[in-house]
Image 1 (cartoon, rainbow, N blue to C red):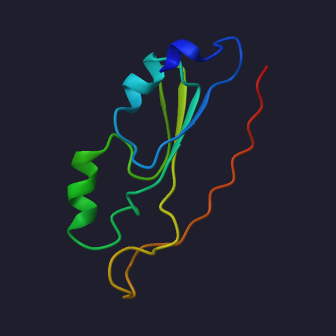
Image 2 (image 1 turned 90 degrees about the vertical axis):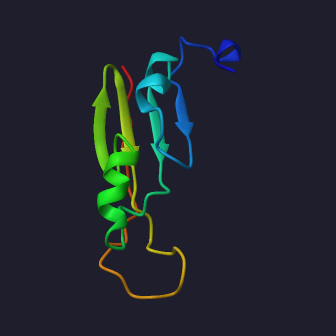
Length: 96
């Protein structure tokens, strides 16, 4: 897929699940944005998700790739109050 992407321009990716972030960076993506994890809003999911994904919530840099994962707005499964925090991420991107 990336063979059709102009690598001279910044490459942003929106992917529902934050899997394979290191491989995404190696493919030439500058910034992937993901969600899906809800930051493990229900115990023991928070412990399980930390073993499933390289980044459950927040920011992490893999090589030259800046990865962002948001916990979202706590709308998952049954409508119950959980310990998760609602989040809308604002990222100011500037390329040189």
